[in-house]
Image (cartoon, rainbow, N blue to C red; front, top):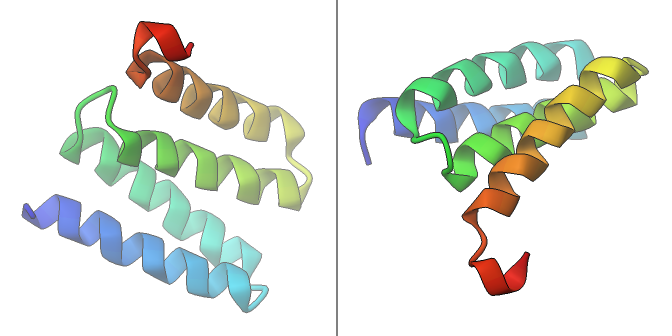
Length: 89
């Protein structure tokens, strides 16, 4: 695993812990950082990038920022749909 990919994994573990302990603002900041790292560390259609968009979207939805949440969740969905074989779309 490359350095940035490892850092992405560590940050995702941290944001899961922050979210589980109801530290939403901190979890959102970590999720935003993890997303920026994912954009550099993974190819456009890779699942970890979709995961980052999805986690940030879910946190923003919980915060009540529905517009930003929807944008991130749609990006995650698009990445995952493009990664499916044609007979599974």
